[in-house]
Image (cartoon, rainbow, N blue to C red; front, side):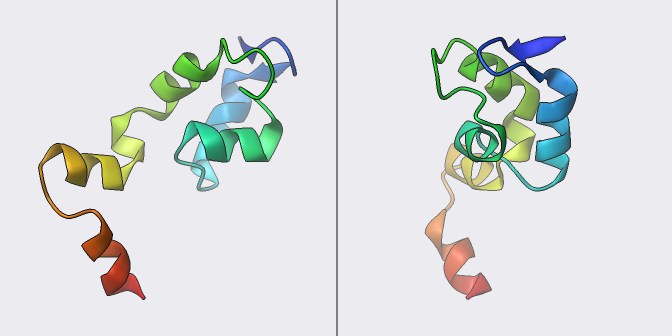
Length: 74
């Protein structure tokens, strides 16, 4: 099923980019342009990615420091 009609990007393609490390709609857009024209597919891309695909968002939702995790990794 097409997610982005503007660029002909399918749900499977979005999932492949997510499996490859893309965890935000912006990263998906960088990988395949989905969401960069009319923008009507951005919510669908968010739904495909799900909250579980964004560890920093999960930390923020729990009220935990988001940047501390990044500093520890450096």
